[in-house]
Length: 393
Image 1 (cartoon, rainbow, N blue to C red):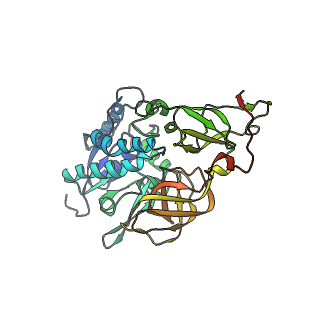
Image 2 (cartoon, rainbow, N blue to C red):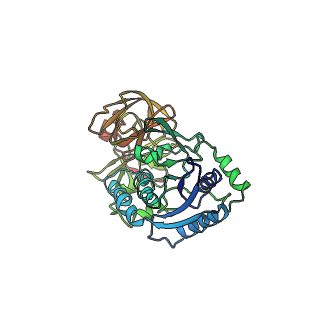
Image 3 (tube, one colour):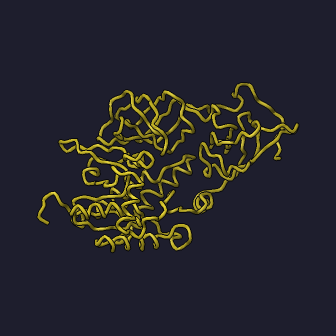
């Protein structure tokens, strides 16, 4: 390798089309490319829901077509210790964690990066839709992917300067349709492979069925915003704020035959009361209990290594959400922040990430702790308390 601009780059090959095109682009540019397939989960890996065997076969087929070596590396122990244990702790505490965020920070850009460096790599590359900008003086910025429908900077917001300095996102400037076109044009065997969804170790398995193996199932009452018991939940850990499906209360009528919640108004999870083991639900997407203008978050992590100044920014409180204008406050050394939004945000969920942006630049974020959505006692609900019993239709 005579060109000093060419490097030894280790690519995380998942078996999907995005990482496959990533490897091909780097190989075409003349780099020495080595593929790594990461195995992050072992339990039930031989069943119908989350078999890594087929993914590895797809990754190996891609490596063969491109003409690169591929290594199978097992990070399951690291994943269980660093990601899955935290995942369970958060659910037991009544929050809804985002393990993909932690997986990127702890596995894909830490354990994987360390392994790649031991192989003599100068950089690693993944098939994420994001971009890294070298701003000089050894400083780097994380930018959104140019395809707004696929941008994954939200999941990468906990990366450090040291991690970004070693990372490439070759497809970050492409749209998904272009990635598919390239894959088909060069004859990659997975060109039409469906994108993976959800968390790898859960796969297409029913989520509640999976959690049942690890979390205590303690049923309790479901109450509406008037304090009426309208059903029974199977355990608070199995629900998340804003959830509509799978609550199990369906259409309800009171003793007089009137429909509870209004005609055609669906139920949404709005609050979990761990002390009383009560799940609170409300009827209607825009119920006040689901809307928040302010949130507090902790365990902040900033791409630059230090907090940005307080001021006007945009933020997302969940993936695929449009940027929401807000004021950032409290960026002190304690690692806690406050976001005040211009418009109410829907179903702000403790345990999820609030990620802050300055235009195309992802600044970092923090883990949502609480919001100002109405969460007082049901008796406070505008004097609308109705003691009439509720029965299932």
